[in-house]
Amino acid sequence: MADRYYHPAALVESADVGLGTRVWAFAHVMRGARVGTCCNIGDHAFLETGAIVGNNVTLKNNVCIWAGITLEDDVFVGPNATFTNDRYPRSPRMPQVAARYETPERWLSPTVVERGVSIGANATVVPGIRIGRYSMIAAGSVVTANVPPFSLMVGTPARAVGCVCRCGQKLLGDYRTIACDVCGETPRMRCLESELEVSIL
Amino acid sequence: MADRYYHPAALVESADVGLGTRVWAFAHVMRGARVGTCCNIGDHAFLETGAIVGNNVTLKNNVCIWAGITLEDDVFVGPNATFTNDRYPRSPRMPQVAARYETPERWLSPTVVERGVSIGANATVVPGIRIGRYSMIAAGSVVTANVPPFSLMVGTPARAVGCVCRCGQKLLGDYRTIACDVCGETPRMRCLESELEVSIL
Amino acid sequence: MADRYYHPAALVESADVGLGTRVWAFAHVMRGARVGTCCNIGDHAFLETGAIVGNNVTLKNNVCIWAGITLEDDVFVGPNATFTNDRYPRSPRMPQVAARYETPERWLSPTVVERGVSIGANATVVPGIRIGRYSMIAAGSVVTANVPPFSLMVGTPARAVGCVCRCGQKLLGDYRTIACDVCGETPRMRCLESELEVSIL
Image (cartoon, rainbow over all chains, first blue to last red; front, side, top):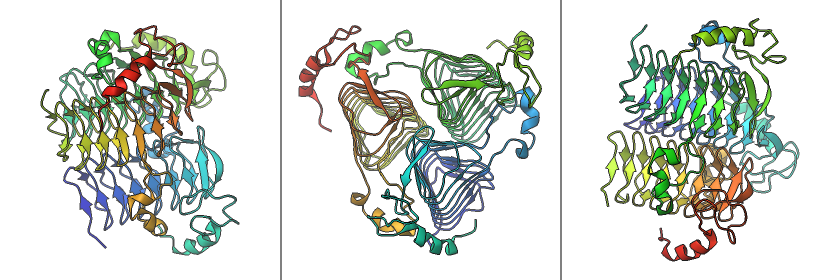
């Protein structure tokens, strides 16, 4: 496996970055952020202490992964797509809410993005939800609730408008029964096998 | 009060930053931007000459505060939330519009974000409006008109779907009469008092 | 024409940047990106190898121009507005899709933004479309289909709600017949003339 590559203008403070991962200009990986192997972290991306990122993940430019966000293997996050980890955000130094921000348990809502999901460009993901494996979130959507696996989600708030294959193409029916007319795979069957090989983050 | 902290990769050209304010990596505070005390300015944020930011304000990553934008004390701005200051933007060096961009009076529409407001992640705020105190703008919303105080605003365009307390929780009725079942405060009464102590930017 | 200006914290690797163009702090112009004369490239913007940008273009902060995106002369792109170039994005190092990402022909959908268009702040543009000259995309909109010239586009997905003049103001009727009550121009007539002078990118 190739060595890590850190662009000279990147700022990588974490000691927990996997082999083969590249971090591009003006990106910032804080101490304590965990990043797997063979990831690609675009310019101006940001990984906070406590962020957890699997293997083969692509983060395009300006993506921020906060404490409480877990991205499993093979996830794609488009440019300017935005995660959150606080359902009722206030400025923590506002005196009336200072107590709430004393410990993360009081305010942090974790989010899990399962294996192979694609989050479209400039999409927004509210906190405290789980996005099922291989789902595709359309560009510009706002995800406000849990997403079942293999779902194509569109709009504000995002609604399921169909199923997608692991290869990213829209399926003509339910992923549990139909084969993809582009790659030929029946996602449900293939996934039962692949679940045996999911890496544990 | 603690001293200012500027990350070594931050670019702070303003001489008007208050004590206790922290500016993080790759953020840029231009000469002539005014920033109060105890603010937290995230990575890759940008404050233009003419921006006005009160005390205890939190700007998350990638937030840009332009000339003509005023954020009062205790404001929270989520990551990638976007302000604007021109209702009819064109590229200023396009010959047909060059005259309009000769002086700010011809094109700049100011925006005021009142005390304690939260602007959700990836929200968009059109220019020339006022967002009333302690309102909460949901993540991914597009705010296109003035917002009354204590409003919970959701959607594209953003609509008022209820009231919020100063603590950030949704109220079960009108903020002028009801007490918050989380913090116990009746926001309207508490605010009449607090108006006596609003700092003047 | 003025010389180029590159902020000391900018990263300009392209040798194909026109005279009079300014590139601001923490922006990154990759080798092989083509940029015309008199452009203004804001802080934290990013131009990928293969991006094509005409003359007099304004890119506000955090805008990314990918391979396959062409911006003609006089285009304005608001802050955090987001382009895309892949209709079915997956993380390219996910083994099941690796073949698709071997050559750009298999996945890249080009986008053309014609002369004088304004893309509003935080708007999203899906790949493979053409935005007609002098159109205005409202802030926060999601553009999902080709846009006729002089269109005012609003919403998610963006719908045409009227016509705009070259000067940016809303017209009271069709751009082919009506004069702008702000600048007096009849856009259609003026444009037939101006088409003679369009620069070829």
